[in-house]
Image (cartoon, rainbow, N blue to C red):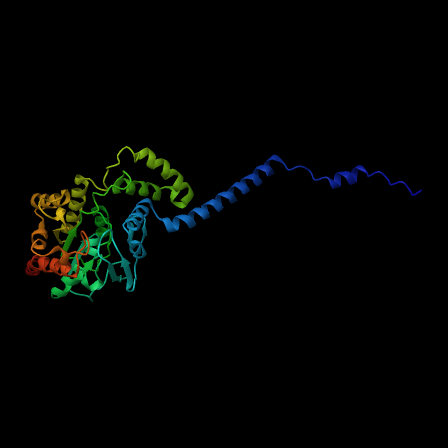
Length: 356
């Protein structure tokens, strides 16, 4: 028989058994695992939210898709302050499709490094800022056919900057104007809003969404997309349940007038003359009584002594099929008529400012 194996000693047993982790080490390992999980969730959230943008941008891009013209989203991108903006440095991007029941649209869009639609001339003495929404931007027409470009071609020694952005309300327009890096103060600011301001998207206004965004950006939450989404979800519910005010517009009439007054005040502070442009629309709504926003523009012009250029009677003299590509956006002939109607007022302002 073989020799019996010897029993292991106490020293060898103690050497083979790993002692249990202390409570502090277990807590440290758990914290590391939780931290790594949170970092992974934060990375995933950032990847997902980069494409999605903010709530207002999502609502607008969804609206564009619903209207049947998703190509428009190709030239826009999210913005923390303005909700969305035109992409800079676009070179002849072709957009084709329909907006609801519009005729087929097929036009090209180019922008400069500041996200302004081209063409833009070289340095000229007199500067005109054209502030507005998709009507000013020129949905449905090529770069040189949008009314700011046509107006510039009709004026001597003047440069028209197209600050129009599709979907903009007066709230966004005011912030775009105030933050724009002009190389010299404009002499004239043409202001055209109203079609987007009364839209009801989620029962909350542009001002409320801006306040939520500002609170997030000025807190520690700006460093965490994950926590920002969680906290903002609770904040939006506490601020105003969407179902409680389904008809809350992006801007109320009073808010709309307040934003326009803010734009006019900025103009006067820098020596520019504001001009309110009352834009027409095609069909029965374009005839007879003014819309609420058009009435606000008229009242504001009278009460605050702001020049008003009303396009309704001028457009009423021509067949609508010739002047519109859809319900509100002007055709090349319509943009030409807008520029021709604005020209005498702008030249008068430029002439008086030169005399001073």
